[in-house]
Image 1 (tube, rainbow, N blue to C red):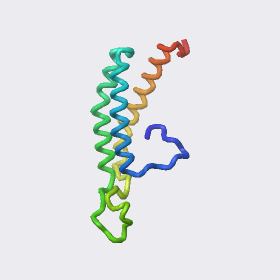
Image 2: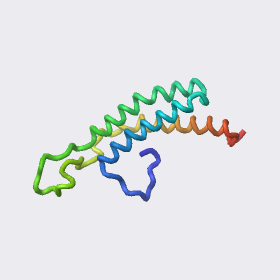
Image 3: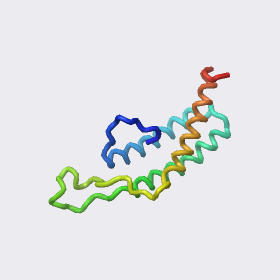
Image 4: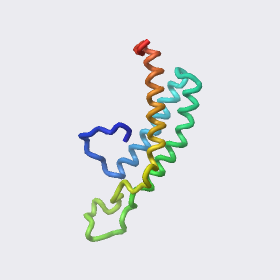
Amino acid sequence: MVKGEKFTASMPPNEEVQYLTTYRLEFKKSYNRNKILLPEKLNNKIESLFPEIDTFIDDFISGLIPPNTPDENIPEEYRNEYQIVGIWPVGRLEPTLQKMEEINTEIEIEFRKIYGTDDK
């Protein structure tokens, strides 16, 4: 999602929703294990991000066309999956993505300081 790779195939929408929710949980676990290493100001920013990520996931799901009702024209293996993705209002997901990118940069800077690989 963020900084997507140019030459990768997109995953089916159902898998993408599962990926987003799993990624959110894994990020939260990792953050909770490492938050003692980060400045309080950055911790506050990260913690304020979780509700925004939840809203982002809800907004993402709202941009999916729900599974179709049984239709003989749709192959059976696709009948219970989302059929179309990307139907969001313009600019709906970008503010959260921008905030995530800014916090990601701050986290990287802090870990570079911890490991002594910062520019100073």
